[in-house]
Image (cartoon, rainbow over all chains, first blue to last red; front, side, top):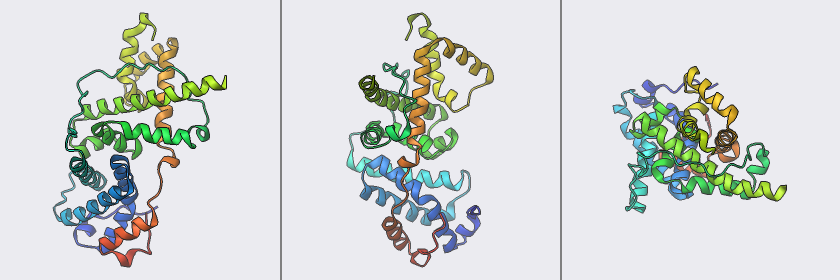
Length: 194
Length: 88
């Protein structure tokens, strides 16, 4: 197992340690960019800008959050800045439905026992990726950090400067929305197989 | 969902995420499990939501960083001399 990244070494300008940090976090940050912007070029810009910004701001890193959360916060801000540029009409800070109850499920087909290779090949994978892409940005960002990258509720709240309650609300909506979209598709498939 | 237990279904739905994440007290879990035992629709919603989360966490959905993207990143950061030593 790799030893933890030394924040002291990073602040002291240790390039080898910085390179190690880049290798450790570049994959999830690139994925965040891909999920948020939907194309490799923008994801690469977010990736590069995140680490350039980290390099500039490392001396003022106070360790109030973990290094990972701090990097995700920078990456999320880079993604939001780029989204604002591309979609100035979208409110990225608020989820319009934050204050409402979660929508009621309408699909009740149980496809949960279908094997993964059936669910994640070809059409199924495209459907899932498309469904994630369709989530409103503010909700998607929470979902990406919590469910795709595995941050805790608290870390997600810290990275996005949200309350934990907000994170939980958006996460529940995102999960239910994806479930609903997948269920609509697989309900038909189950019917065809009967 | 069954109209007679509609309130319970709504209650479960509100706590679904936290139940899946194991963030609820044992007392609340017990309450939810009691409801689940008698409500098939809620069981389906729970199972398919869990499965949805499993799918997005599958390795197929988590591709690695392409080599050329890593190379350009290291060059941009003036870390070319560390390109060989992939440590991630």
